[in-house]
Length: 350
Ligand code: SF4
Ligand SMILES: [Zn+2]
Image 1 (cartoon, rainbow, N blue to C red):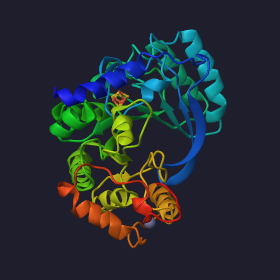
Image 2: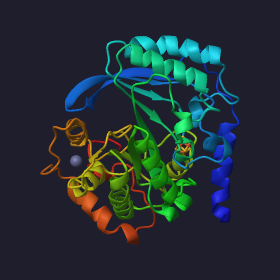
Image 3: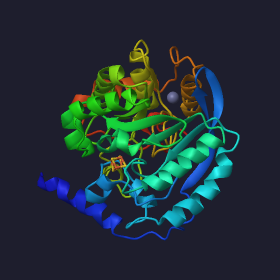
């Protein structure tokens, strides 16, 4: 490991060593959002269970991931998981689509016990949920981990992040191997599940142009193996390597124009490719200038629901994005000064 990387690793490990005072009977969050189910737009019930969290995060963790901030080192008892579920349930009643996140892998039985998982799957099926999205690292995508007694149709979301081994290893710090990803996608689909892939846009150490190229190539590579692809522009989560770089002004969140370019270049592929940028329009998330942020985010939302048209969007900041992109390989790092995207106008800092 290069010496320069060590302080970042120390920084992240130190942050993980500070225990957070979470209520163990409360889920991290729950909300309702619109989603596509078949050809319809429906309301989906969404919840994040508070668990021990991702085993990889405990070991090393990915450079952009701050999910560990929401976890409980050592894990949560079945009793507390059930107490959380009782609070989540009203959010799911009357819905046909559910998304049950943890800050790790729902089908890692050491994170979410199989008996509890089986119970909640059955509960969802009984209240009329037709499809449930869960997330997992590829290593747990084995039918024995999702062979539920009675469950809605499963959609397993896997954080592929990139199909490039160099980007995965050096920028993301994730030990995912492409042949294994392909193998588990097939296994999941052969066993009746759908697969969704998350692909990152602009992990640390990539400039705007390289980030776009990496995301497009990753989508092209993943498309034959999955049912849909979400482009996840990297956002600044607390106590992460990305946050440290961002504070040093060595990396800035990607432009929304870059998100639009990736989606537009992938629009002829036979899978849905869309984006719902976390923290979009803020300085910690993908953003453009303060004039067009909302307009682009609205179009991305419509596009995600099968309605938007991303071609023909314009704003005066687009030429600044073009300049950054074209100079990408010649620039010092992946950052821009605060206010640059808005032309240093109105004292607004983005
Ligand atoms: S991004 Fe996923 S695999 Fe990486 S540390 Fe976070 S939860 Fe774990
Ligand atoms: Zn703009």
